[in-house]
Length: 428
Image (cartoon, rainbow, N blue to C red):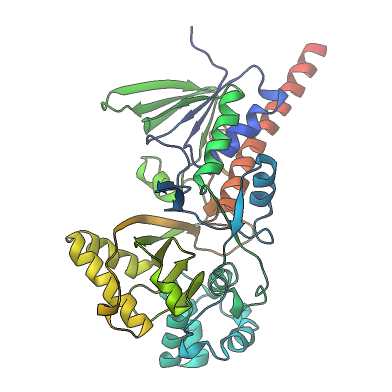
C-alpha cells in the first residue's frame, strides 16, 4: 500500500536539514514520514570541512558574525558547538587605495537610491572615473564587484558583511567567529538530531524529475548505479539553489518566480608548511589584500596559509590546479612572495596543500528587492522551493537556516489549515 503521508525534502544542505528538523519537532507532522534525499554521499552542501592533521579546515562556509547571523549564533549555542575567534578583520600591508576609502564609500552610499539600473562598477565610474573605480574594487579584494549583475545595493551588502573589508563600513567593530571543528560540525549535529527524531535519509539519490497528480507528487531519482528510484510524496521541499533548480526540466525560474538569479564561482586554497615562517614577518592571524590572483591571503595562527578568490580569479585557479602540482605550488608561492615583497628563495616549500573550487559558490536574486517571497511554490503549495538565495543572507549559513525554516513554516501552515477544515467538516 502506498504511503500518501510523506513529506520529502530534496537536498541535505543546511536549508534541507533545518527544514527537516523543524518539521520533525511539530505535532502537525506526527502522522507523516519525513524523508531527506541527497544527491551526494555527505550532508552539509557548502558547509564542507575536512581534517588535516589534528585540525579542521573549511573548504566552504567558514565564518559568522553574531551581529549579522543571529540564527547561526543561537543554533551553535544550543548545540554547544565549540567556536573560536575568526581574527581576519584587520588588514596588514594595506593597499594604497585603502587610505580614505571608508569615507569615500560612505559618501557614495548616499547616492545609490538613484542607481537602480546600473551595476556597482558603472555607479563607481559615474562618480569616481574609470581608473579610480578599478583601483577601489582591486583594493576591496572581491572581484564580483566588477560583475554587471552586481548592483550598488548588492555591492554594499558584500562590503558590509565580509570581515576583511567591514572596516570600510559602519560594521567595523563586528566580531567574527568560526567553528573549531568546521561548519560541517553544525551540519552533522543537525543531521543527528533529525535522524534521532525519526527523519529518514537517502544518499546518492539524484532528483531527475517529478510528476504531480491530484494530491501527491511522484519523485524520480537516479541511484548510485543510475537505476530509477521512485518515491511518492504529499509535500515536497526542493532545498536546492537556483542553479540546481535550473538543471531540472521544470521551467525554472520562469514559471516559478518573478525574479531572476545569478551566481559566482569561489575558490579556496590552503597551503601547509613544516613551520609558521610568516610569524617572522609578524603576519600571524592577519589578512592582506593584493593586486594579484591570490587577492586575499590569510595567515592562520601557526597552522597554514589560505587564499580566497571569486569570479574570474576563481576560474583562474581552477585552471592552475589542472596543471601539475609543482606548477600550481610555484605559482602560489611566487605570488605570495610578490605580495610580501620578498624573494621566493626566502620562502620554504609547502609540505602539502588542499583546495576547493565552487562553480556556483554564491547564488542570489539579481533584483535587490525585500519583496522576494520566502519560498517559491507550485501545485497548490504541494511543491516548495527554498534557498538562501531567496533571503537577504545569500551565501551564508544564516540564509540556509532561514530558508529551511521558511519552507517548514509553509508546510505547517497548510497542515494546520487542513486540520481545521477537517474538524469543521466533521462537525457538519
